[in-house]
Length: 105
Image (cartoon, rainbow, N blue to C red):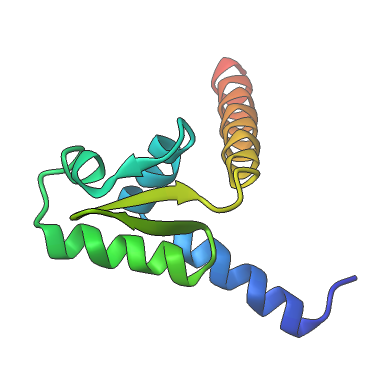
């Protein structure tokens, strides 16, 4: 059993991922390091909005960044965060199966 403090830390990480833009950024970074410009090009949002989402992910320890010239390069700090997505997909598939069984009755 975890402590309440440990649960709060886990919630912080989950909350940091709990936005479609941030989930998409994490998924994009599964392929390796990416410059801000590449991340920005994925969305029809302004740069400050993308920067804020990246900051949330950085503060949670999910991504890190480094400067190269004028470009900021981002990477997943802990690639195992992708395992969370795999688990979420299994939950979605399981829910769909349950719903299909209910419809077939």
